[in-house]
Amino acid sequence: MNDIAESDNGDLLRINKKTFLLSSCEFIDSPNQDDRPKECKPEIIVIHGISLPPGVFGGNYISNFFLNTLDQNKHHYFKQIGELRVSAHLLIDRRGVITQFVPFDKRAWHAGKSEFKGKNNCNDFSIGIELEGEDQTIYEDMQYIKLAKTLNALFNLYPHITPRDVVAHSDIAPLRKTDPGPAFDWCKLYDHLIGDK
Ligand SMILES: [Zn+2]
Image (cartoon, rainbow, N blue to C red; front, side, top):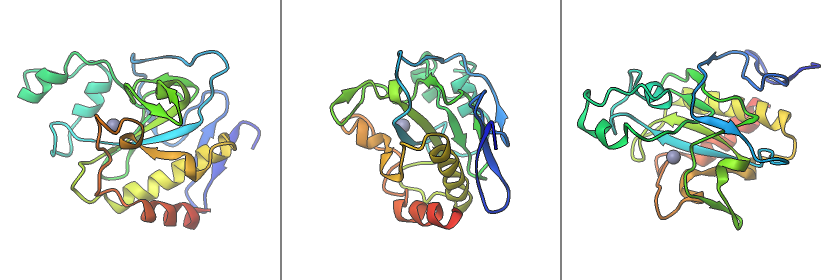
C-alpha cells in the first residue's frame, strides 16, 4: 500500500502515487496538458459527457480529439472542433473501458471558462472525467461501475475530496455546457459509490 491508493472489493482499481496513473487502464499521453499552478491541488472532480460525432458512440474519435489527431475530413462537425486543444484525465467509454490521457497531478484542459464557488479556471484545481455519452441517452451500467471505482480510488488518493465535490460540467459552466445531461443518474452513481466500498 506504500505507493498505491486502492479501493475495491474485487478487481482492484489503483492509482500509483508516484506517476498519478490508474494502474489498470491504458495511458495515452495527451499533449494538451500542463502543470497546475503552484500550490494548486485537485479539489473537485468534473463529470462530462462526450460523443464524436455528437450522438454517435464507438470508434477512436474522442481519443483522436484529445491527441490532436482528429481527421477533420471524416465528419463536418470535426471541422468545427478540429483546432481546439482539449483533453481530460480519463475517458470511460460505453463498455466501461477506461483510458487515461493526463496524470492526475497535471492540469488537463477540459473545463474551459468555468467557476466553482467563486473560483475561476476550474482546470487549475479539478480532475476531468469524460463519459462517452450524450445528454439524453441513458449511460451504461458499466460506466457507473467503473466511474464509482475510479472515484473511490481518487477519494483515497485525495482524502480532502468527497462525493459532494463531484460536479457536472454544467454546474461549473452553466451558460455554455449541459453535460453530462439529464440522462446521467446521480443517485445511481452514489449507490455505486457506497456499494463499491
Ligand atoms: Zn464537458
